[in-house]
Length: 384
Image 1 (cartoon, rainbow, N blue to C red):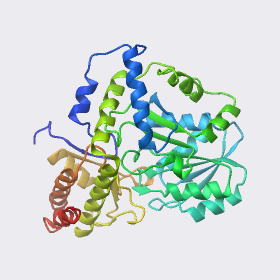
Image 2: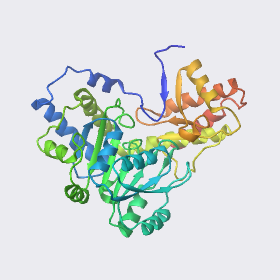
Image 3: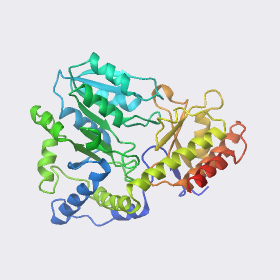
Image 4: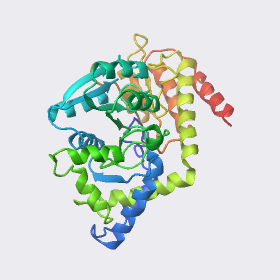
C-alpha cells in the first residue's frame, strides 16, 4: 500500500484539488494591501450565485460553526423564542448554540434518517407563534438527509414572520440554493466540504429582512458581529485578520466552479449519489434514507446485524488506505457514511465501491464481487 495514495471519502474535510493547493502556496501578501482587497472583492462577488443571492456574502476566518453562532447572536436577543428543526447531530448543534445565548428553543424533532416536512413545520409554527427565527439544516451530514429547504421556506413565509436561517455547510456548492427566490434569510456554509478547501473559512449571506432584525438587536458579539463585516466589506476588507492563504485558494475554487458550471456540478453530485445508492442495493446493504430526501453529498448506510460497520471501516483504512465516516452519537459504530462531494467524480466512486466489495468479503459478509460496481457503472452509462 502506497501511503501517499490515501483515498478520503468522508463528508468533510474533502480532498483539495492540486491547483487549489498551489494557489494556497503563493507568497504571503499584506492583508490590508490593495492586492488582497481586490481578491476579497472578486471572491465575494463570485460567491453570490452559489448562494443564489444578490446580497453580499461575508467571509469569516473560522469554521462553519462560527458562522452558525454568528447567525444566532446577531438576530436574537436573550429570551427570544426560536424553532430549531432537528433531524440529526447538526440540527442539535444549532439548538445548543441558541441555548448558550439564552434563547428559548422549541425543538421540532424527527427520527434520524427522516426529513423535516413542511406540514410538520406548519403545525409547529402554529404551536409557537412567537418564534422569531426558524433554524434548519439543509444537508444533515450525520444521516445523509437533504431537507426540503425551498418548501420549508414557503411554509414559514406563508404562516409566520420568523426569519429562516439555514445551515448549508455540507452541501452548498453541490446542490441548488436559491436564497433570494426561496425566501431564505440567512445561509451559512464552510470551506472544507463542497468548496474543496481546508477547514478555516466560513461564509454567510444575509437578506434585507434579516438586516432589519439585526439592527434592532443590541450587539453582544465582538469577533462575530455581522455589522463589522458589513462595514468592512464595503471597503473591500475584513474587520479582523483574514486567512489570506485560504482566500487565495478560494479564488481558485470559484474559478473552477465557473469553469464547470453550477448546473453541471449539481448533476455530477446527483450522479455520484445515484451510483453509490444503486451499488449498495446491488450488494444487499441497507440504505439509511429514502431516495426522495437522500443527499447528493453523503450517503449513509445502516447494515444492522448484517456485518460490523466499524470492521468494514477498519479494513478499508488499514488495507487500502480508504477513509469513510462512521456514525455519530447514538449511531456511532452502527452505520457508515460515504462522502461524495467537491473534488470527487464518478471514477472515485467506482474505486471506493470496488474496495468496499473486497473489504466486505474480508470481514465475512459474502457479496458477489463486481455486483456493486456493475450497478454503479450502469447508472453512469445511463447518464451518458
